[in-house]
Length: 125
Image 1 (cartoon, rainbow, N blue to C red):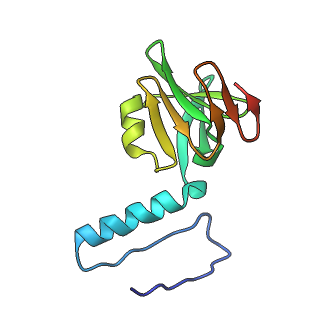
Image 2 (image 1 turned 135 degrees about the vertical axis):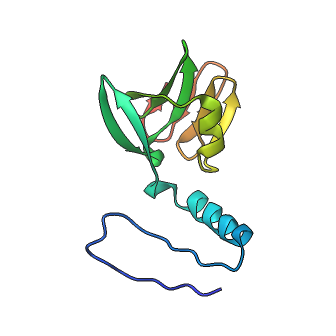
């Protein structure tokens, strides 16, 4: 496998081009890169009628309640139109579905009990 790196100070975000001799190899490499670099991934969310692009690394957990899915960060709550099962299929490996109504970001969680969620940076939820 060859790896070629280019530094472009005009680039808005990192870009990866994969060339492979089969779709299976290309998909496997793309999946590996996506799972290895969640800090560059963002998700479109809404809050009070405004659209936002939020970095996945900032999301503590997703929660489904009252027919809506909410994304919780350390200090804000956003909504998404995606269903929880859709998010579970699309999110990188750092996110784990822990119940019918919740997906946790394992990189952000310090400890979890039935009644309490402790995050690494923002305390108790």
